[in-house]
Image (cartoon, rainbow, N blue to C red):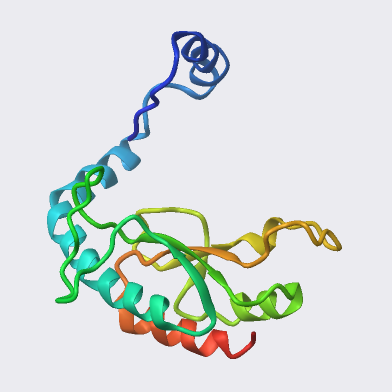
Amino acid sequence: GGVVCTSAQLRKIIFKEGLMSLGAVMTSQVAELLTLRMKDYRERTQSISLEMKKLLKFLLTHPQVKQVNYPWSLDRNDNWIEHRDFCFPVGLLSFTINCKDRDRIERMVNSFETIKMGVSYGAKEALAIPSVLFAKPGDSNQNVDLIRLSIGEEKAEKVIEDLEKSFKFL
């Protein structure tokens, strides 16, 4: 269930090498799941938006967080400031931590309990993917301090509690 926007030249390559070998339709089980998830989409996104406010405020004020990468921001009354490119806030962001020590970062992310390791966006679970997983050992030029986080449908309090506990490893 997605869209690819590309040039005509690249579209031919994708069609020839990808679509023809993988197929153009999803399985009936995946289509059914997608249909069911779309029925309550508005309610879920509104709920995620409220939880994201709590998580964003936590991350923006935590001393172990160096920077938060999120396109939305809050006004003084904790209302989302209208964004020119997006219709509503989503539950996906990334942040950098105040640590470059690979071993401590690995201990931190391995201590997650509520947050699971994964790259999917749109899952019910809170999922994180730390950049340290992709860094080559011994290469000091690579980013190891970036964490991508999708809160899914988890309550912000549970995600915050998990992060707070894990930050103690830094």
